[in-house]
Length: 110
Image (cartoon, rainbow, N blue to C red; front, top):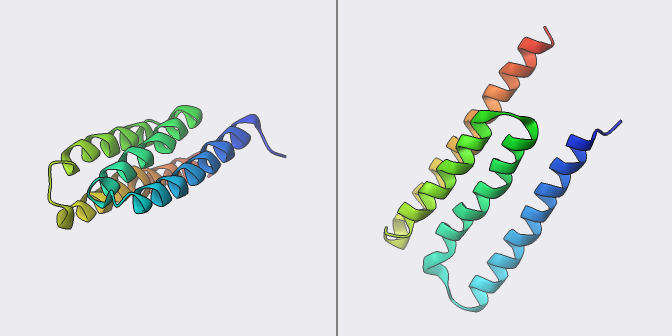
C-alpha cells in the first residue's frame, strides 16, 4: 500500500524528470551549452532537497544545498571542467545519502 509520502516522492521525481528533459531540449535548441551543467546542478538540488524534507532526512537536504552551491561555483568555471561538479553533486546528493539511508533502514529493521 502506498503512503502519502510515497506518492509525494513519486510526483517530485516525475516533475524533476519532465523539467530536466525540457531544459535539455531548450538549452540545446538555443545553443546554451555553457550554462547547461550549472542548470543541471540547480535542478538536481530541487528534488533532492524536497526528498530530504518529505523523508525528514537531513543528508538529502544537505545534498540538495550542495548541488546549489556547486551550481554557482560551476558557473565561474570553464565548460570543460563543469562535468567534475556534476560528479561531485552525484556523490554528495545521491550516493552518500543513499548509503546513509540504507544504513538507517537496516538499523531500524534489524
